[in-house]
Length: 529
Image 1 (cartoon, rainbow, N blue to C red):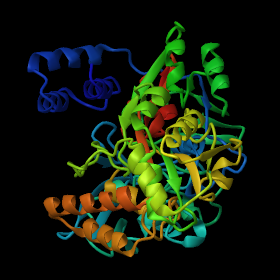
Image 2: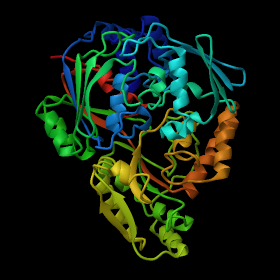
Image 3: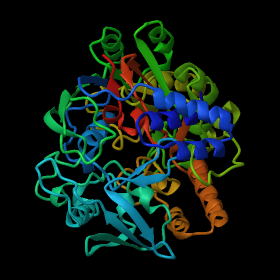
Image 4: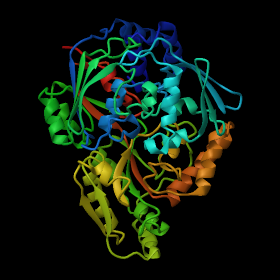
């Protein structure tokens, strides 16, 4: 069964798709009517979601510095925390990535896509009993446009010049047209909060399927089901316990022994071992996530484009994909976009390991001495091994890389986006525009390569408002080439999201949007005791 048919049948099982819609989508995907009918009947007869139980997740990515404010969410752990208690205006469909209604039940753009009107869902209550209003939505979005909020969505929100109400509708006026706007509003930082979170951004009060009952940064978070949830197709377990487990061995042991039901960040090297456990199921999902080595383009010695090119050619991507990911992924090409994105720039030559070219650019750079690379187990699964492999491949080009292993706790506050050369990961974003706006726009808070280019910024803004898809695709190709050849990004591989669960966990949805079912894992699954 393909990811798409698995997704379709899961929607039938969850009661989210009727026979007519299922048959139409299956036919569009090339499935015969007879086969589609059999799939639908099987899914319709499948076990209905069970309610009840305490779901336990052992997750990597927590830190003592984690903030309760969704605007400041950085880690995988807080990504899931926010999905449990909060909702966005818009969500994305798991397989296609297309926008689907959430707190906004519908929307309409102007002819030039510069003004958007959203119908806000009525009858939705926050966890404190207050009813959601358009004013809550307006103030939430306005808070994320304030640089003082330190919001990870600030780069996205800067394209909105006016946020206002038209009766009980939300109106967003943009600086230029943007056909992708609904998808931009799926950003996981944009959790709608009472009064926009202005009273207390750390209150963790939202409209989501679970209420927060306790939270200790870097340790654990617990939740109870929201009995007033406005949706019936989620929130199947009664309670959730999220336990911080930054050690990969501890996560595997906890799952294998039944202490937890689900773990993230399974090192591909341990997959075969986990498969032997009769109670464990491996969950592998292709998507937009990527593992990266990031250089600050404005910090010596990485402010030298020849040194950056030398370090890019010194990367043996194929070996790294095989040894670090065990084949669970695809080779990257030093720009953060793959074939899952609309208007993917085709025909760009794949950068390959080339010690001679690396040596040429290294000598041209004039640099001498070692290059310090900081890494940690929490950067991505196998990050330390990847750094060592990189060290070995660079030696053949005469480049000495010093690998410094940093502690996991504090890595995201003290190393990533702080130190000039480090390992990291990105989960991808719904659109090319959002990926570039979040991490490559000069003014973006999360511009972790310090890629500061006015010509790139100008092109990004032009592409955002370009409604001719052919022209827009050409612009994205130019942008990809700029990042690839002149930026500080070394992207050796796009990773599959490899997680694991006990076989009593049912309903897992493979979602290309991001890891852990796009963060919704705890709200989508149920327990078959």
